[in-house]
Length: 340
View 1: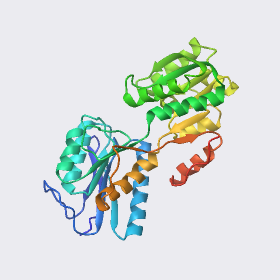
View 2: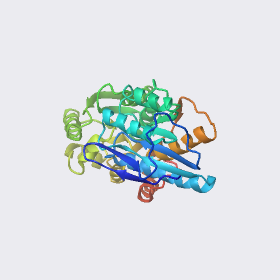
View 3: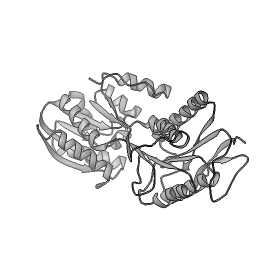
View 4: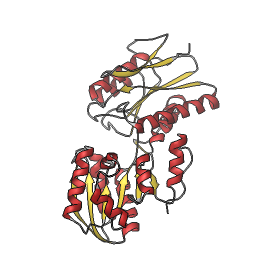
């Protein structure tokens, strides 16, 4: 029988989709013999707009596959309210108990995800990761960006904006975080054959206010700074007026800035001249592509490499309006126009 699903959210606890009928708590899983395919799509947390966009992509893929295959396809959106590995493990356990056909998860912790993922696989439920991997688990593939290539692309954007010489600073989040370090490594390689010098690398520990502080302190210490690479968008979340020295330099055109991610607040900053380019992850594809891949793996027996490159979005003033439109319509199925 086809299940009907509803979302239940409890403050501070896991928010999971529970079946209204036909719940199964069997410890081993045998695929239902009806024509329903259900993917449990599990983000790090429910309180992040990029994951909501991925959810929309997953729902769109389910709608398309249902129409094209004649099989009922469902995207089951499950997650804890905030990022927490213990809660995420319980969410995966709930998905196993419900007997879903596949799981796609963005891991809060690569090691913490190993046992929950392997438990699902032992129950006969294949698992893939997206956005954030657990490479030592038994997941059948990881869908994500090449952070190294993203860093190199950020370097190329900055070179186009400021030329092949000058002083730049880097802003990162938590020092040592693998994805951020890869972006920095790619950026450094991208400027290796230029006369651009990195004069300062500062960290904000993923804190918006600390990001504002270290950027402004760097602007004060290096008044002749020519460029920034924001490895993440932390201080941008502080909004207009939070970084007066930064704003003054970008408004005058003396400072060129490239940042990771393509959220709408960053698109607004790009249009206003405070950013010159963005390197974005494909948030929509986290859901859309994951559902298609999991369906192909389970239903069609398709295999995938250990890492599946999700690709990236490059946004400049040339194509920013198209990215705005994609956000407004929540439709990211069309490729962006060229950024240059």
